[in-house]
Length: 157
Ligand code: PNS
Image 1 (cartoon, rainbow, N blue to C red):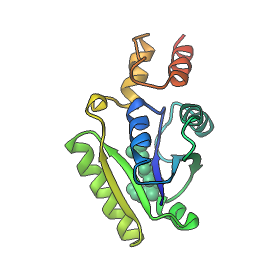
Image 2: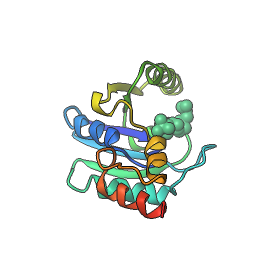
Image 3: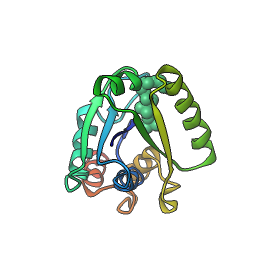
């Protein structure tokens, strides 16, 4: 089955990587779908976020990386995909993701969402926290893939 792992990935972290790797247990193809435009302000452009993910998943042959615009359910319909995978760190995440899952189900009844608890060792991680630590030259080695670390540390100099 093909599944979509949608998100902002600004930038991808080890928490995201853990979900991607574990998703291979139930998806034989996983599309990491990077949100292109929204009201959010991103640190990295969509092309940069896609490139960082591609570099991070280069050894995972079941993963494809694309960017998308508009409603996630429209992307799913266009590509005949029914399964959305999201990671949840906390109860707060869970409540938010449950609401989004209900919205997506409401928009398209064929959309199913699978919420996966993140690995406990990454439960504290977020893209914004990683960027803040990098801005102060803190050690982010265990938090992000190497290519992201290099990019963040270069941009903080
Ligand atoms: O990494 P994030 O910020 O949790 O990702 C959120 C994302 C991209 C999955 C969500 O914002 C999304 O699907 N946006 C596309 C627009 C959409 O479909 N909105 C309706 C559900 S709120």
